[in-house]
Length: 287
Image 1 (cartoon, rainbow, N blue to C red):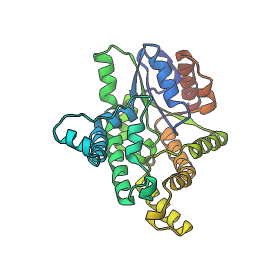
Image 2 (image 1 turned 135 degrees about the vertical axis):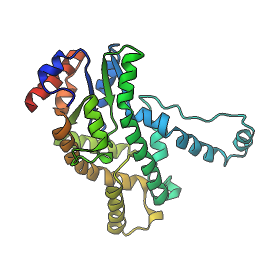
Image 3 (image 1 turned 90 degrees about the vertical axis):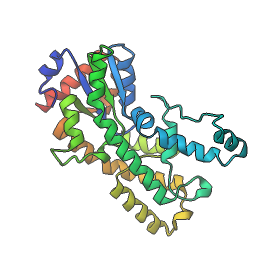
Image 4 (image 1 turned 180 degrees about the vertical axis):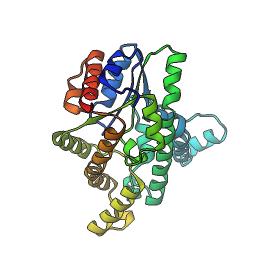
């Protein structure tokens, strides 16, 4: 671990940590708050994925759709228009839209093979973006003069690492650079996340084995063929199962490489000092 104790953390002139856990529990809220102090460099893994590693896939998908429109096709063929996504820290819609949902094409669904291809592209991109963390931490210091660094991870980080493997490439590299901090939600948080997702289901990245099993089970339980699956219905059905699937993986990551803070405590954080103190308490509790 980058910080062996609360004393190490509290006394460190340079504080570096990453937040991980399910989306909606405060990762980006804390990251934005610290960035706005002017003393922290904010590295968004999702932003890095969507710009550096998935940007071309996303733009090409836009172009394929534009080529179906005669006017836009002519302009594209003569390099008269430029098509590019406009991803920001706060708006990752182009990445989500590209990932898509499997099922009935009339409802916007993708063929399952294409869906799995895009999932694999995202997994590869996420690993690369996570391994870029040390590079960005160094850049933050040497170019911009930031002593402090926060890595805002994707909720799917637990799908691209092997929590049970002490030699996992990604987590080993990360824990050498910064302190992994898991934001642990309660049952009430889980229920609220499910309700929120049910209102606005969005594409997500899952582990290959988990996703293949979920798809086969869903088709069998609902007696459906691939082309008759309602994409939103499938991702709603999958989401609650994904929360249960991810929880022990997050816990194993925190137990092996980092510390745990409760989502309720994170919700009460209103300042840089609050967050530093909360992490110090978590290190003290770890012993």
